[in-house]
Image 1 (cartoon, helix red, strand yellow):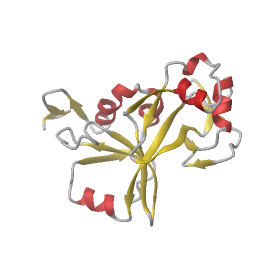
Image 2 (cartoon, helix red, strand yellow):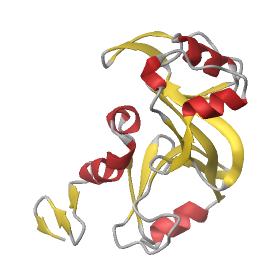
Image 3 (cartoon, helix red, strand yellow):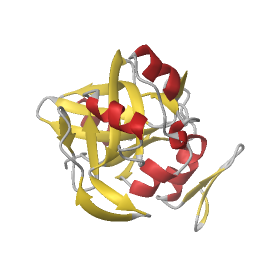
Image 4 (cartoon, one colour):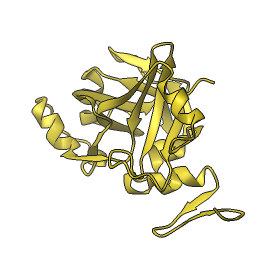
Length: 197
């Protein structure tokens, strides 16, 4: 099974502080292993502040309240912009975006760009609205994640959903991701749609 464009969701009883209540977007799975971004760990760095460090000024008010995410503990100084592969109007996809200098296209919906030209476009209001910025990423060596999942070691896996990825507030992503599996998470318990877990 290939894990590209999947959500890896920690089980509610997970005790590992790094992974408690986490949703991870898996975006690369090949013979070398798996890469992903934690989607619901704000970095406490406003996007505007990060851009100022890059000598860029945010003019588009849409992003004024956006926070940078802690994508993972590997290369935490490296930045990634996760965004729609195509222009949108509402939630409808239209023509492809212009090609940025360094972009990995995951599929028709999701791309990941690491070059600053996309940040310049975002600052001016010409970049993708459906986007977020991560610092760092998660990595699993070849076969590692497959082994953890085979042992049922604290994870759920489900195909990624673009609404959760781009249109769900950060603090609601965990519950929204669990809901894709028919699980309702509360503070004290977990319920399946068909009854108690």
